[in-house]
Image (cartoon, rainbow over all chains, first blue to last red; front, side):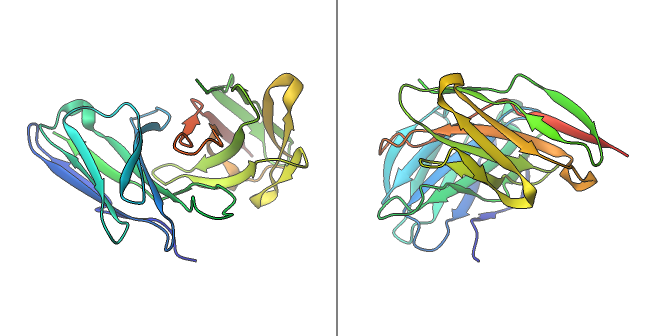
Length: 115
Length: 115
């Protein structure tokens, strides 16, 4: 079965640079979530989109922005990168409309290292 | 606000022994509850979930969990662990309310298996 696809899997950036992470949800899933997991930490919710509109917002820095496109893929843009942004970034998707079981499925994650 | 507590940071069990990982949640109504497993450097894999109905839920890899409303708990169990079960386990709570269905994770329990 198709899963949530994230790219790139690994990314190394220098401080103050910009990074973009991409997420392709499971087909027919209409909701996308972004999570950040620092080293040895639990995943922290950043932001979510339903039908291309922001549906919820968590602890996302102002330097970060995200959007969901017409094909439902999403991109997380991170600017002015700091060392503390080094983390595993998860994308997850869910089919909100209709009876879906309400399960959120996670991608493998994108490792961002800021040096 | 919803929250999850996993009181055990690290648990070590012998291969073949039984396992119970504790999870306590805080939520105003009946939440959606999940257990995810994360192997080193990997993504989050769903083990099982509880939405309603039977309070004992079966998951993959021989895991089960029991929802106890009176104790606000959703403990994960396995009768006999295998070396491949060594991983980080996260309990998560989600809200059934549309637009606020993001997951809140516990801090995780690291499971070590000894021969």
